Structure formats: structure tokens, C-alpha cells
Image (cartoon, rainbow, N blue to C red; front, side, top):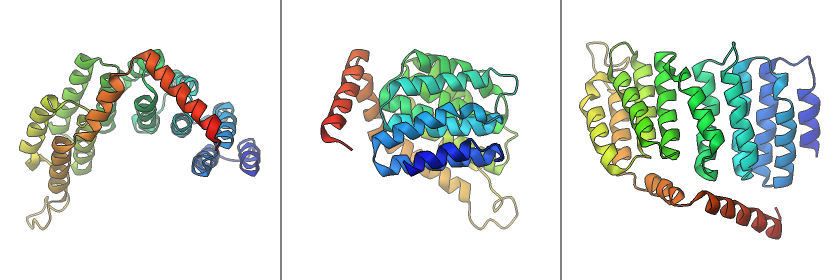
Length: 278
């Protein structure tokens, strides 16, 4: 109760800057998640959602929506997830849409929620609205395209997923990225690739491994090559992507569940929490 009072009083305080109000919302939701008390978390989530409009800065609002998505997924609140995904769509379509790097703070937990609860119509709207944004900005745009590719794979739209992932991989290996930007883009692509079947992973991992010399860093830019950091990190990611059988197996298990079975599963979890109490 004190956490809820603190959240409402602080977020309603108009003297706080947007970033301060966003931090309050994030920290209170994390308190709710760690508490293990679903009732408290639901109250905190509801109060935060009602105050999203209090943040005028689109980047801070996107980041707080991302934290709300994490909380809604913990609660298995599919309705809340749908509402929050639609809030991201609305935000993207405004004239002052958030920067791509800010959108990633909402997209990542959004995809995690979809993996946990199943993908519906709101997921399709969410991904379709973000595709044009993914073309903006090379560095963050590549990371966003990799994330969206994973989302379309969840929707079983393999053709669009493959196209987006290949585009992200092509841009990662193209000229123009700095040391850190190429490493971050490569990490995003290889992380998304773990959700692909083995047949789809192998040729793309081979491309990444063969392009290792492109992953330079501030240590290898000089004549004294002491420690090729980014090459080693990307090589590790390639090995992880090839060897990982847990991620794709988990995705397949969820894919085998029909929409009705997903609903039944969520109802069983809700009934189990009611019986056990938290």
C-alpha cells in the first residue's frame, strides 16, 4: 500500500521532470515484481498505465511502457499486454515519435511478453506499425529490424521474418558502421537467430563467422593489435547461436499450442494463483 501511495503521489507531482517520473514508475513496478504479490503488482501497473500520458517526452513514455509490459507479462495479463502494445503503436504514429533506440526499450519486453502469452491481433498491429521505423537510423535500425524479425517469426510469418533478418545481417556486414555499432548490430542479429530452426541458423552463422575481420575495435584499429575484443565476442555469439537447442525448442512448444489452448493455459495459471494465493 505504501508503494502504491508513493507511486501515485510522486507521479502526480508536476514539479518532477519526465525522466524523474519515469524512474519512479519503473522502480515501483520492479518493487511489485520482486514482492511476488500479484495484487500489489496489478495495482501498481494500473496506476502507472493511467499516468503514462503524464510523460510528454516520447522516449521516456516508451521506456515506461516497456516496464509496464514486463509487469503485465508477469501477471499473465494478456488484455493488459494488448493495451500496451496498442499504446506503442499510437506513440509510433504521432508526429514526435520516439527515436529508434527509445522504441527498443518497449519492443524488447513486448516480444518477451508475446513469447510468454502468445501472439494475437495486437501483436500484428504492433509489428506492422514498427516496420517503417526500423528503416530509420542505421545502427539502432538494424537492432530494431532483428527484433521485429523475431516478432514475425512468433506470428509464423516466416517470409517476412527471414526478409527482415537477412536485411539486418546485410546491413551489419556493410560499410559505414563504427566499431561499437557493428558489434551491437551483430549481437542483435545473432540473438534473434537463436529463435530460428537449425536449417535457417547455419548459413547465416556461417556468414557472420566468415565476416569476423569486419568486427574491428579500438584496440585493433592501431598497428599494435593486442586484444581483438569484438571478434572474440561475436565468435562466442555465433557458437551460442549454433549450439542453442533450448530457445528454438521452447518456441516450437509454444507454436504447437492453438489460440484456444493458450487461453486455457492462461486460465489454468490464473486459477492456480487463486488457489495457492500469493
